Length: 166
Image (cartoon, rainbow, N blue to C red; front, side, top):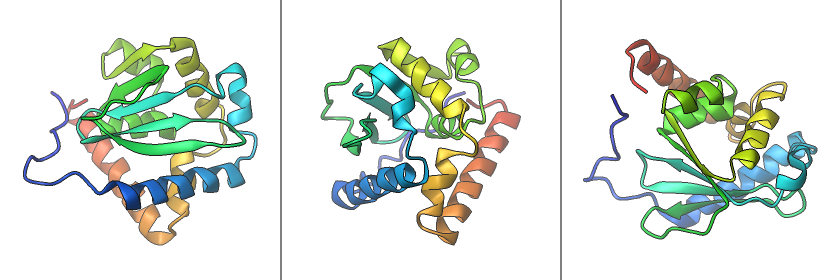
């Protein structure tokens, strides 16, 4: 079973407020974890496309410690990238959250990786080696509402796993 697609009757979220939120989030995470992107070594300038297949947008991440980029891009306007990580939004959250093994997700086809797989493995290992979660860091940026939303998404994902939904 696949995650349900974005409802056709809902418009895609506006990019400008999302871009501002994402830029703030990446800066917030780097303040909390200053060495995070340095751990990527030669992959610090890789253009990662994080592609939640059931949403109308993807995220472009360039983990440059000096000038990090995290921005939303419309699926209809593809951007150049070196590596692409695709799956349902909640599966990607689990991977970013360090709750699921990226290798297992890849082999069960819940996660698709194309392009520079070495860079993707390095990114995944960096996230796996963290104490805590980058998702927690991002949610803490907006305080209690962010933590409530993250808790809801984690519970939704757990319910999907228990029901056998990727």
